[in-house]
Length: 223
Image (cartoon, helix red, strand yellow):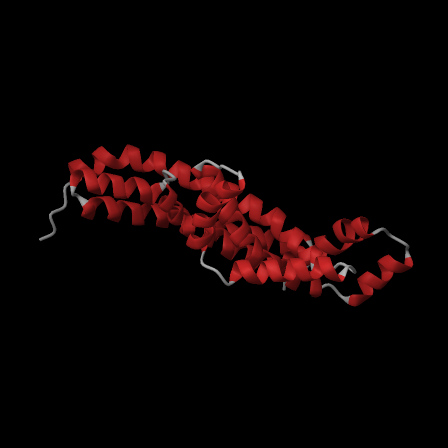
């Protein structure tokens, strides 16, 4: 028989729920950074300036080819060597945001390349500026095919937030480890953590699918 204690589970639930809020905030802020920086990476790889394109492409490949936990350690422990001291929260958000920005840049790139060439030629014929071409014409058309990948990485970034515990960010897994070390009750603690991740991930995935379907209908792309 499993030595399950309901009284202990309910006792630690408030601490885990508070840590869940921290986890959601970490995932949200990190994803926000990834959305913006990923688009910058994607657009920088399409510029006419070869040096900018090369720097952006190599930066993306470097970030994608190294582990997230190494990048977290690098931002938190190495940046101070250059006079940049960051709190665990700030370092964690920067690291996880840059990590996922490199993946989202490829999602954006795929969406941009799916736009028919005729759209680009029409913008050139109308003498539209680069910024207007991208943000008024091209990006809105590139968004629908990019949404599935963007949604996958949103769920992925949420599941990767436990890595921030290595630098002391008090997210859900960090709190669970602390509770387990204090009480030596790991069964209830980790089971509840798993359930909390499921209770957030599954509705989030369903919501993303619904949003994707709505966008496709709005753009007249539904089959």
